Length: 102
Image (tube, rainbow, N blue to C red; front, side):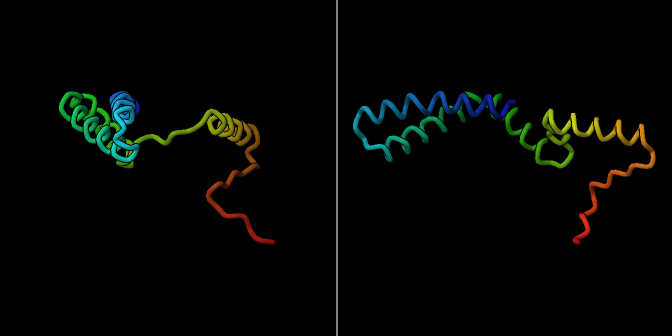
């Protein structure tokens, strides 16, 4: 969430600057370059707390210690499988094996 918040802050700085430079007829490519550089500088100088939180969130996500992100469908599917196995001990669910080719 912190990464999204920081990205939205940077986007909120970039878009008006891009529009301003585009209206000043600097060309779209130069407008994007100028707006990107200024947005980077402003966010670097004034949003250190948000940047540090975003960095910490990304570090946690890619460290290997983070919990996997599961959709509601995956959670429901897992609970159905668990209930099936609990109710029928003879049923085996082997997700780790590849199916045998016929």
